[in-house]
Length: 137
Image 1: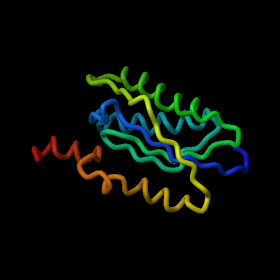
Image 2: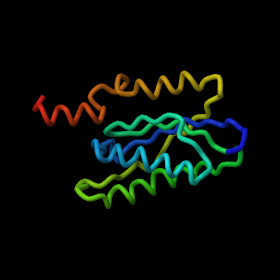
Image 3: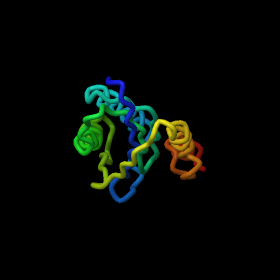
Image 4: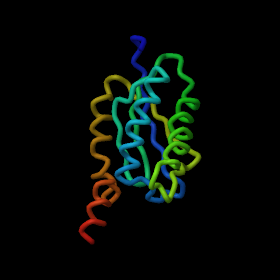
């Protein structure tokens, strides 16, 4: 990767903000997003995957086609995840997404923001839903 440090905070939701992401889907998405970023000469710096949406902090080269990168993340993951064994609901993303540039000075705060997503969205953590189903709570 080049020496440029261009960061974007990307966020997008599942279609109709339905809880489509479970533990297995989250593990798949984490690996898929990281591999996709590498293939696009980018790097996932931070990632928060909840039941209904994704927040990603990505470092890109200076000449990035951001809509194309997001298409690889969203379209590619939806296509691949919907074909996973045991996936009965499929994974569909809402058509829109939110890109925000992040300066290197803001990087630490952006990473903290991603790490605290389950606190920002109580009850939407993937592990929380899995725990509630197992315990009946």
